[in-house]
Length: 65
Image 1: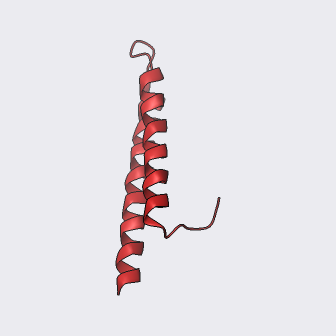
Image 2: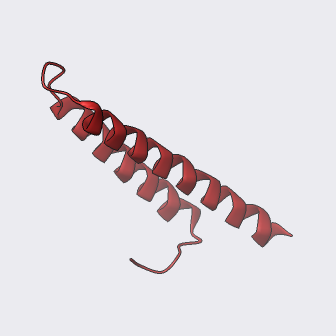
């Protein structure tokens, strides 16, 4: 892992990249062959994205104080 980024553009790029990865995985899944583990992994990816969004927002707030 790299060092934390405080540059807003880099944060947005990171989130875009992660979201595109999620979309790629989602598009690759065959609904006929999807099992609970696949769904759990998708949920985990969304949770990680949400966590990163919160982390970036918290950095922004703490830096402006």
